Image (cartoon, rainbow, N blue to C red; front, side, top):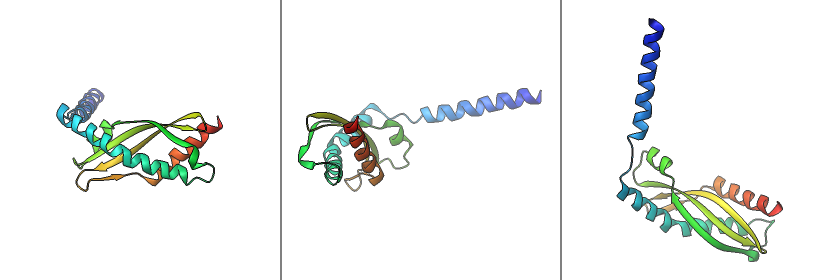
Amino acid sequence: MKNTLLFSSLLTFNSLITFDSYAQVLPPEQTAHYQLVCQGALNAHGLRLFDALANSEFLDWTLIKTAQQTSRVNYTRTVDTLNERTVHCDAVIQYQYDHKNVVIKTMYVVDQDRDSVHSELAELDESVRDFLVQLMV
């Protein structure tokens, strides 16, 4: 009897946790606004990524050409953030380097209160490393 009660209590607790994470759904209007925020900040993040690539000792920056950029809201990280004015974004940037296609996936954060884009140094370093690996393959 104790085991059954404990098991049913755990199931109830687990379902409450699961329900709570789904209860934080953003309205479609807010999601659309966040998407526009990500699109607007993509250029600033893309320029930082280009600067990181251009500063690599292994790349000739004159051969780096941006082909296409897209971004989207990282819904999960944005919802999990305690600050409603912070939007987490994912980006996919396609480059041409000496006629070879290179696609980089990266992320950045937009602080709407300060109207600023935060690109983490570790994320930029990882993107440069991914770029170099794709060139070697």
